[in-house]
Every structure is written in structure tokens, then in C-alpha cells.
Amino acid sequence: MSSMNVEAAVRERYAQAAHEREAELCCPVDYDAKYLKVIPQEVIDRDYGCGDPSKYVRPGETVLDLGSGGGKICFIASQVVGEEGHVIGVDMNDDMLALARESQPKVAEAIGYDNVTFRKGKIQDLAIDRDEVQQYLKQHPVTDDAGLRALEAYLAEQRRESPMIDDETIDVVVSNCVLNLVDADEKELLFDEIFRVLRPGGRAVISDIVCDEDVPEAMQADPELWSGCISGAYKLSAFLEAFENAGFEDIQIAVLQTEPWRVVEGIAFRSMTVIATRPDEDAIQSGAGSASGYQRVYRGPFKYVCDDAGRMYTRGEVCTDELAEAASRETIADHFAVYSSDEDAQRKSFSLPTATDCCSGDSCC
Image 1 (spheres, rainbow, N blue to C red):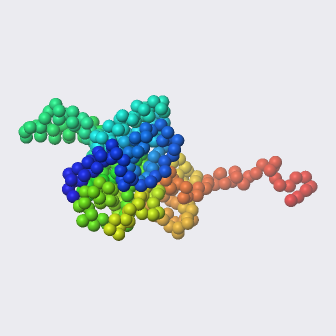
Image 2 (tube, rainbow, N blue to C red):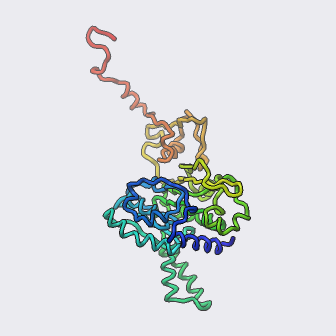
Image 3 (cartoon, rainbow, N blue to C red):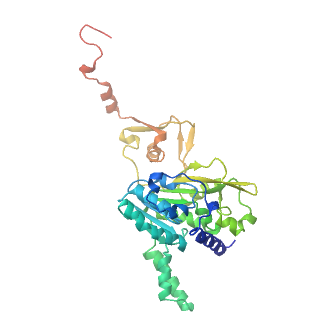
């Protein structure tokens, strides 16, 4: 299917799903009930997800939800990040955006603050605010070549001067069963955009549908399967490679559904949640290297491991300063033992004061 046909199929099906629940569009997911109490029932009923990336969000963070739909994940995340945090939802479907925006003041009143913003845009092009483009076109209709050139200049300026989501401004990007709906030719752009907007050290937490083998071309040409989260699903290994190719590190499978969600033409489709981190070359924890008086050693259980940057860690072997700095990253630090290598500190630890001697007077242990 062409990109235009994919978008049309997805837009039509999800516009209908914004008004009437369609059970086939989602996997059963258990959310923390305490966060659902303040969310309008129509938002909960119109939620079409396959995981819960919101459970990996932290207080005070700025969160971007790709394909935010009726706003359920945004409204959960808004409670997790608290009043000091901020949540941005991006979606292209007018009906879903209307549902989310209508529900926003209700949630804000219930929790006592409003920290959510909903924007209209393509998740594979986070620089262009489609609401602003529509306003521009109302004032400057494109009727000839000059008008087209003016529109192109306007879009270029928006990307350069006032992108919808600016570079390195997001702590965590979440998405729930939406990446598969993007045309295959634009998926690389999508991952590049996720990487662009994340701050160094920021995280992508993506729940989506994957399969065990490549989806055949005949299935990819089926608009019903495309809009149903089937045709655009990544092969499991290819999904992880997409993060790696975009420059992410510490890529891990957080959740993998045991039983298939659906089996279509013999191919099993299931939900998976992946966490990946944008590298932060400047973030070196205090005391990371041996020069600071501390050593790091990979604990195991494997004889050696290799991270996404090609660094090799051998079990029981003291890390070089460079490896120790890399091993201090929050995402992998727990896999390393840390001990003092400072000779003065060691001498002090063995020079016990008299009061701590095990023998006193004429007695002896």
C-alpha cells in the first residue's frame, strides 16, 4: 500500500473507533486502577493499546506520547509526573483529538492541575504542527505555483524556527500500539524523530505489536490488516534493530506477551514493550573510574557481554577507566560490583582503634 492509502485506512478506522468501541483493535492490558478513577469512561472505552508504557514514567519528567488517541496514557502519565512534570500527546486523528481535548479539563479538575497538551501532527514528523498548517492554509489558500512555493517556505521556516517538538526537550517518549500504523517507507524517519526530540540520557518506552517472521506483501496490501495493527508489525528482531540503527543504546525487552494476540495466515502476532536510551556522552557519574579510587567489575552471570556501543565487559575483570565510566550508566550499573581501590582508604580500614581490639586485659580470644 502507498503511504497515502495507509494513512487513509488508519484515519477512517480510528475515526469510527473514536465514537464506537472496536474490540479487535487492542490487547487486554491491566492498568493501575488508581490512575483510571479520574479518567472519563469514554476515554477508557476508546483506548486501543497493547501495553502500558506509562508504568516506566517518573515524577517530574516531560513525556511525549506518540499516537495519543483519546488521551488515556497521557492522563495516566500526567498523574505520575505530577504538577512539576508535563505531558504532550501527538495524534493525527481529529476525532480522537477531540475526545482527548474534551476530556482534558475534567481530568485537570479531578487531579488539581493541568499539565497535558494535545497537538495535531504526524508521529514520523514531529516538527510540523498540523493545526498551525491548517490555520495558515485558511489565510493563504494554495491556488497556484506561487502559493505552493509560499507553503513550502512556511513549512521550512516552521521546522527551522518553531518545530512542534523541539530538539532534546523530552525525557521519555512513550507509544502504545501505534508505530505499526506508520507506512514502512517512513518508519526510519519515525525512529530518527524519536531520537531527535529526546534529551541525551532520555528514554523511549514503546509498546507495539511484533511477529516472528516478516509480514508477506499480500498481507501488507490489505487495508483492513494495516489499520488492525497487523500488516505494519515489525518482525521482533527487526524492531530491536530499528532502535539500534537510530542510535539508541541499552535496548531491552521489558515485556513480551507469552501467548499470541492474533494468528493470521499462520503468523503469530504479540505485544512487546521495549525500553531504549539515547546515549549521553557527557554524563559520567562521580567515582566512575579507577582514578577516583573505585573499581568496577562485571558481576556475571555471563562470561562476557557487549553493549550497543561495542564495549566488551568480562566477568571478574576490572574495568578500565573508559569502561568504568560507561558501566556507571543508570541502565546497566546494577550489573557491576564497585569497590575501593585507594590504598590510603584500605590502610584506614585495617587500622582499627584500640577500643575495637578483640582482646582486652589478660583475656584473649
